[in-house]
Amino acid sequence: MSLINTEVKPFKAQAFKAGQFIEVTEADLKGKWSVVFFYPADFTFVCPTELEDLADNYAEFQKLGVEIYSVSTDTHFSHKAWHDTSDAIKKIGYTMVGDPTHAISRNFEVLIEDAGLADRGTFVVDPQGKIQIVEITAGGIGRDAKELLRKVKAAQYVASHPGEVCPAKWKEGEKTLAPSLDLVGKI
Figure (cartoon, rainbow, N blue to C red):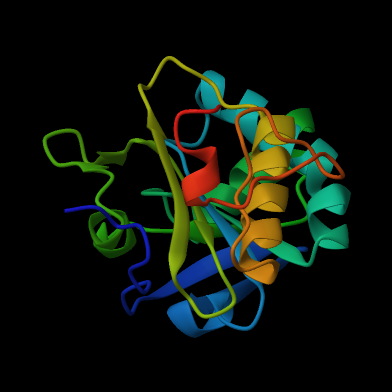
């Protein structure tokens, strides 16, 4: 079953953000756009490159009113230790959620059960708490924050412009489409 247009399931977890331990729930995802960014594990190889890329682009996400929540099956304590020891992870200003019970990873259907780790799953959640974008990649394939920014802008545009859709490679300010009988077979 697809998670598109489904509401984020309830969860409660401990997280690390800005030198503090905080609690995060599904309610924190409501009222604004959010990115929930799953990765397999702290202290690994591809993961820090992705998280650093998100950190380098975090201000751009915030300008769009988007909050980022990175999630792995590690604990919030592990996130703090990684933050304190890695130059790449020290850059992170967004929330790093611990999911040692695997509840959140199961809710988003990214848990690799036999490994106890999460797939590389990216979810864009609208202000109503509904999932609008789902992307899952294999463990060895890193993601690109700038491409995610483009997708978030497209999702926000479509949400605020009923009756319009964004074509492939659409970028902010470019022409959109208004689906109609007149367009059938002409694109």
